Length: 497
Image (cartoon, rainbow, N blue to C red; front, side):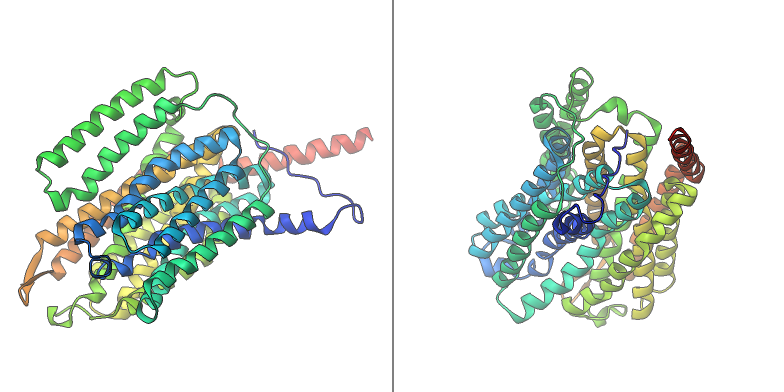
């Protein structure tokens, strides 16, 4: 059950500091989500130069991305459960602190081993969004909750759109360590602001932490995502990749069996088995796949040499600026998502968002040669992503008990992460298969890019169908009934007085 909104003291009886903290809660949490996405993105412009800067191989350098993906996938549901048990603000602050420590280590070292370990620490920040959404549910009144949750969910795309051009500018005009010193300072400010401005939620689910379940989930996810992320490099039919997939299947099956028989499991699988929760997770996985292809393919397409006949030969800075309108759109459209969810229900918003994503890819297939059409198509996909990502946590919040919101949203974010990892592998496989030599170097063909767009658009349509199959949540009718009950209770109290 939702906790009642805190009652402000009468004028003149309270101090201004608490009121100021209340007003800053949403901006501070949103800035933490943006900072998390920026941290995940800033290393991308460095990847071509890191082998030279660190003296490591290209395969080793790729682990600066893979390590963050793996640790984020493992730690998101674990820290979500810890937040439900021990305090969401406490765990949120710890996640931001780990992210900041990782950034400091990156700023201090050029050793590839240290960089990979530091990036793994930064993966803990993937839990920032589900923990923040759970805090917003506990602390905000219903009339403010929808827009705040929509904004919080959109911070992932906003931060990613901001992080790429920011990092590219720093890399181009300053020493690459400067970028990590900058993010370290921002991270430290985020930790201090969170501790000061965010209240500790009173909603808890006490119990004993499921250590065995955490280890089992970690092992299964590492096997699964390592196989997906390295399949293109090691070979999809290689013994290592097949062994990882088999190991993931066995470990996750045992983990599922263990979770069903544990009194206080890490993930309540009986809750996941409910159609409103389970189908929301399926939609999150599919939407993550469809969304991620947009950034991957757009960046490569506009940077392709002009000699290909379709490429624009843009720099990494110009590439980031091409993606920037999508980030601005996500910021502007998050309030619209909340209004649609309030009027029609979040499952309709989710379905609409997935349909808009498919329309964006249809634009990409129509014209992927003119820069303005590329930017328009990418922005339409970003708009659909805003609607879909903003609706997903609202679906979860309406379907699970208040004491399990952080862990349930953590699982939902995990499903998005798995979708993004599979999308990255699928897009890479398509582009490798549809390549032709240019100057002795294989370069993806335009047909390969168009096929990737078609694949992502088709997955978006499947996500739309999955959203429409989620049982209705009452939408505006439920909201009106709740408001009517509140007014009735207030009128009875006034009559009694």
